[in-house]
Image 1: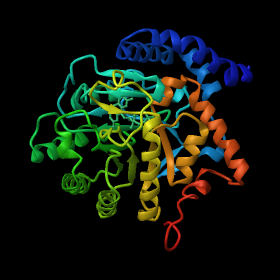
Image 2 (image 1 turned 120 degrees about the horizontal axis):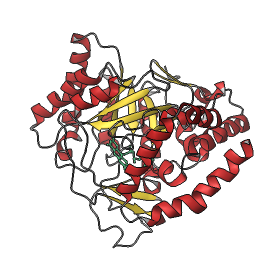
Image 3 (image 1 turned 45 degrees about the vertical axis):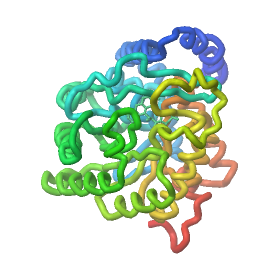
Image 4 (image 1 turned 90 degrees about the vertical axis):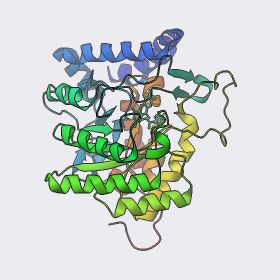
Length: 381
Ligand SMILES: Cc1cc2nc3c(=O)[nH]c(=O)nc-3n(C[C@H](O)[C@H](O)[C@H](O)COP(=O)(O)O)c2cc1C
C-alpha cells in the first residue's frame, strides 16, 4: 500500500490527472474546483482519516520550531492557495505541517478582473494577478470561528485594502490583526504582493518600519501574545534587505517569510515565450528559487539566526526544501510545487528530508538549519 502512495499515486497525478486539469484553459476555475473538492473530501471523516494516515509524516526528526509554534514537520502551505478558508481541514489531511490562509484585507474586495492567473509550464511557474481578492477580515473571522480544532497550526496573512493612503494602510493591517488574531496560531504581515497599485507603498522600507511599530504597540496594548512574521518580496537589494533585517530585529517579530512573487522580471532568463509572458502580475515557481535562496541566506547570516525564517519560492523537491533549510530556513512553504506536483508532494518532500538528514548525519531539522550560511561571529541565539 505504501508503495502505491509513494510511487504510483504521484505518477497517476503527473501523467494523467494534471494533464487533464491543465487542459482547461482558465487555471483559476480549476484552482477553485480543486479547493471545493478538497473541502468536500476533507469533511468526510473516513476519507480524512485514510488520507491523513497515508500522507502525514510523524517522524520526530522532522519536528521544528518557529518561535512558540511547534510544527510536526517543516512543510507548510503558502498564502494564496486558500483565500476564502474553503478547505482548512484539507491541509493537515494532505500532511502539511502548517498552513497559511489569506491574504486578507480589512475590507472585502473582488480583486482584479479575470483572467488573472496563467501557467508558465516551461518555467514551472505561474503568473498571478489576483490583486488580493478576499472576503475581508470580518467575514474571514466568522469562517475561522467555524473551524473546529486546529489539527495543524494555521497562520493568517494580512495585507492592506486597496486604494488607501499610507496612514490608513497601517490602520487597515491593525484592524485586521485585532479582528483575526484570536483564531490564528500566527500572523503574517504581507508586505510583498506585487499585484495592487498600493504595493509601491507597502513594500517600501519606511512603510515596513511604521507598520512594525504600530503592530508592536497593538500587541502590547491588547496583551496579545502571538508570533508575527513579515513576508517580503524578492526584489530588494542587499542593502535594502539589511535595513529590513535591522527593523525586524528592533521590533516584536518572530521572523521573515522569504519570499513573495517576483515583480521585476528584467534580470530573469525565462524559457517561456514572449506571448506566454505577456500577462501582468507576479511570478512564482522555479524562476524565483535562486532569489529566494539568496535572501534566506542573508536573513540568516545578518540576523545571526535570531529571525526565524520560513523559506518559500520554487520548492518542488526535498532537495529544494533542504537547500533552503541549510541556508537558514527553519520551515518552508510551497504553493506552485503543490499545484504542479499534486497532493502527494508534501509526503514526498518529508520522506526525502529524512533521507537527507540521515545522509548528512543530522539528528533533526534544527541541526541542519543554517549549515550553509555560517554566521560571522558567535553562534545563533
Ligand atoms: C495563485 C497564487 C496566489 C497567491 N496569493 C498570495 C497571497 O494572497 N498572499 C501572499 O502573501 N502570497 C501569495 N502568493 C505567493 C505565494 O504565497 C508564494 O510566496 C510564492 O508563490 C512563491 O512560492 P512558490 O514558488 O512555491 O509558488 C500567491 C501565489 C500563488 C501561486
